[in-house]
Image 1 (cartoon, helix red, strand yellow):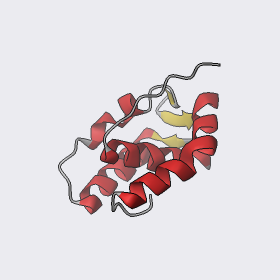
Image 2: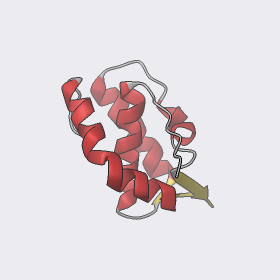
Image 3: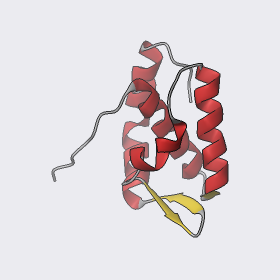
Length: 97
């Protein structure tokens, strides 16, 4: 099976992991995910448009009726890659998501 993976900036990967971590617990209103992304970028103190999170996660997250949830692909990616991504982000000096 061939899986195509896009690589994003460290901040983009941070947001992807943070949002997938939250949605792994269950669906959330889009407003909650927006706030989570905005607070994370502000906390990191970087200039980054947090509003791009839907594009960063277009395969991993489905938004229906104002509610975001992980897709099957999103669950699999989170379960399989979270440790590696967390380690990579740690080596870059970012706090754990």
